[in-house]
Each structure stands twice: as structure tokens, then as C-alpha cells.
Amino acid sequence: MSLQRDLGMKHPIEPSQWEVIVNLLYTREQYNIQHSRLFCLYGITPSQFLVLYALRDEGAPLTTGGIHRRAITSVPGVTGIIDHLEKDGFVTRERCVKDRRTIYIILTDKGIATLSALDKPLQKLHEKLLGHLTKAEIKEFTRLLEKAREQSTLLLAEQKDDYEAGK
Image 1 (cartoon, rainbow, N blue to C red):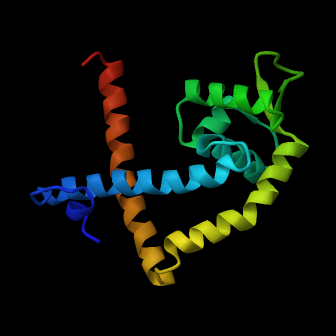
Image 2 (cartoon, rainbow, N blue to C red; image 1 turned 90 degrees about the vertical axis):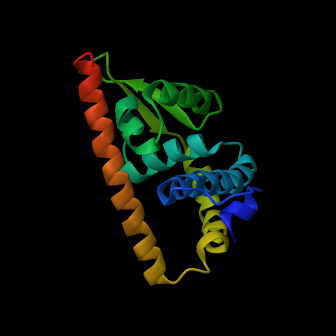
């Protein structure tokens, strides 16, 4: 499949770095649609799934800041996601006894059951999306994505330093 053809573009995407970025964004959108369709059947969104998944992975309550780092979204975004998850019974909030300012997010039985119910369908979806790649290709793809993200992380840190310095 050609990105140029898929997007109906008349000319090749130049330079090649821009083609990679457009390809990443387009692929992310395609994969997000697939995940949204699946998660919708369980009453959650992809962002809500990532919060629930982070809590299950941790195996213990997390603060909003702890979830933010794992859920690929901004802190204000995490708060809204947690509000919806709490309203729908997937998580609860509990204040820390030692520091009342600290609030822990706790996965409920409904949250655990939803994640468990999603395990097999999610595995099947991932097999459909990436099953045509060999283990070596997946490993190389992951390595390249991590290498690209590493550079973005450095750039974000520089931009934060510039912002804080008033540049």
C-alpha cells in the first residue's frame, strides 16, 4: 500500500522525514479507529482503556500523576478520563491517610472484569493488525519507533527548558 495513493495525493510526500511523520499519524489514526470500535463494545474509549491498563499493570492504586506517565495523555486529560471512569464504576478515588492532598485511583471489580473480558478480543485484534509481520520485523519496528521517540523526548525536554527560561 502506498501512503500517497491511500491519501489520494497527486505528488510524493517530500522530504522523506515528512513522509514518515504522515505515515505514523495516518497509521495511528487507523489503529485508533480499530481500537475505538472494540473498546466501545465494553463501554470505554482508548484513553480510558490505557488508564485501566496502567492500573492493572501496576497492581496497586496510582495517583493521577502516576497514571499520566503511563496513559499517554496530559494531566488535565487524565483527570477528565478518571472522572468518567469513576462515574461509570470502573475506578474509585481514595484519599491518602498520611497526606490528604494525595488521591489514589483504584481499579474496581467492574474495571478488572472489563479488562479481563477484553484480553482475548484485544489479542485477536492485534493479531489481525500485526500478525503478518515476523517476530524479527516486530522487534525491528519497535526498535525504530523507540529510537524515533527518543529524539522527540529530547526535543520536548529542550522545549520545556526554553519555555521555563522565557525564550
